[in-house]
Length: 129
Image 1: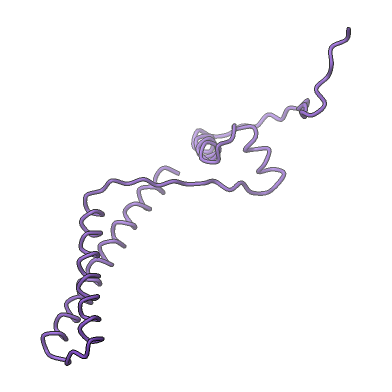
Image 2: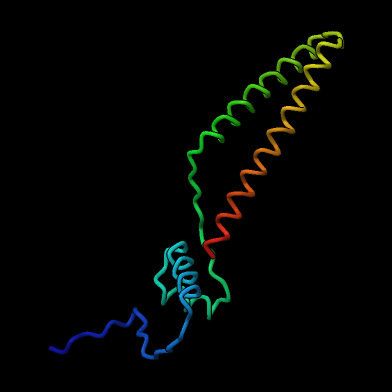
């Protein structure tokens, strides 16, 4: 009995040799790994489709992020209390106005801290390319 040929799988019969620098090879290898593809399949898709979508999952356990998250929760709680106060007919007082101003100032400080951390993260990430 003759051996059956596999009809449903493509057979790649042609070879292309390509020279890359170490940096280029590392970049393409990392991109293929992030896309969950072999190096050959990644390059093949890049050539045929023009792009391959890589999926990134960033996991960080940074104490600074935990601290900022906790502070955002406290500020959110303060803003909810202020909204509840006004919605229940509370008077506009200097104390309430100062609390609002302080919450806004805290938000701006944390926004700049987060942007600085994100900038440092992206700068460090770009150094690997």
